[in-house]
Length: 162
Image (cartoon, rainbow, N blue to C red):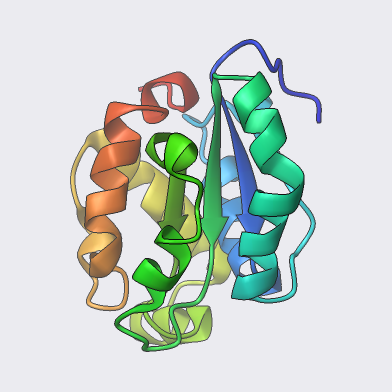
């Protein structure tokens, strides 16, 4: 990890290639300070992403209190997917862990918007910088708005240069 562990930073655990590609687009936005972000290798599934957090990164989060983690998963149209993941996250870390992703598959967002995955990520970053909902209001992404607000209040000021 090339980030400074003693400064606010974000560790991203993508479930799959599509989620990683979207986040790559997010990182490409000119206002994102990519030096404060580390993207892990693809986990291989939402349960694997959760396992990585619990088994490999929880100890580091306890050691480095400026570390935040974003788990990027597909919700697979499961209304309880967020709760399935949230309840497994250690309680002492929940204020620094965020769970986001597409309501279904990322490809459906691409189909609905006509944007590539990278363009989608850049559009999401633009909305974060502007403070507006933007593409986050899309029905396939709107369930992320509460997590987005938590991120805006905690780690976003360190990641975004407006």
